Amino acid sequence: MLPSYFFQKYFSRRHMHRYRIPAILAGAFLLGACTGKLVTVISSHTSKSELSESASETVSCSSASSNWGLSFQEKGCRPVGNASIQELKEYNAYYARNTEEKVLYLTFDAGYENGNTPAILDALKKHHAPATFFAVGNFLKDNPDLIKRIVSEGHLVGNHTMTHPDMSQISSPETFQKELQEVESLYQQITGQSMPKFYRPPRGIYSTQNLTMAKELGYSTFFWSLAYVDWIQDQQPSKEEAFDKLISRIHPGAIVLLHNTSSTNALILDELLTKWEEMGYHFDSLDKLTGD
Image (cartoon, rainbow, N blue to C red; front, side, top):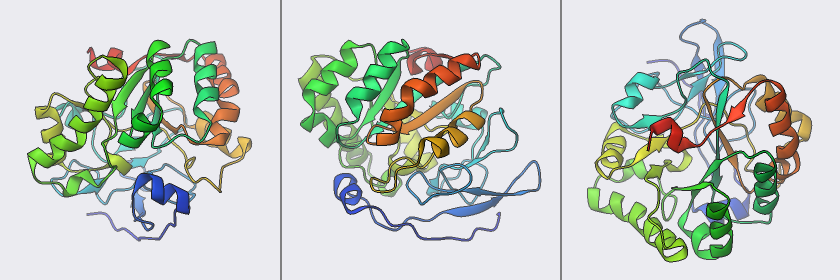
């Protein structure tokens, strides 16, 4: 097992209230498996770091609870995850596509609405860029018209659970299913359609038992291969900070994780998509990745 050194991160009060998650989460330092370099990675809800936004103590799929983790080895190349594309495939799980094609899959975690989603949708529409919004239960309940707009403009709504718990701590298949089914029911009520069977574990915390239960319910699980610290309400990154992470670490087949609550994302998305297009990238939907 690689050595890990944990630190603390404090959420904004509003973020904790909306997501119903603890204020302190663990991050880690991982030794780069391929390069031998010390690489910093942090969880999907931790404080600012020089590298990716997830942590794990191992570089393989584990039956124990783990945070999704990335190690960026080379500019413009897919990072190393703490589980490989091949290992995840057994569970119908993904963090990137294994390809040299310059295709990107845009995803947004949607825990609540603070006025930034319409601008994000405007930018996506301008660039004809499909996206998947992984929605928490209260986002659907509070924003039915926004959900209808998302769907009508060709995007997908994925399942980010009803209450945003640590799903790896749920051992009961019935309780696990309830977290997903309640979101499915809300989506059905709003749209009159069945919800896509796309699932993202809250905070990227997972276990193989978790992944197996999701698969048995017909779900594909999605992690990510590129993200940055964009969710802290009162500590939004500057445009320059955002571009530094999102331009330099983009790579073929990336699943990009952004947050719909970020005012920075709302401000830069049009220009960001333009920059990626100028680099030769195009955008595709997650259902093209899975074949669903």
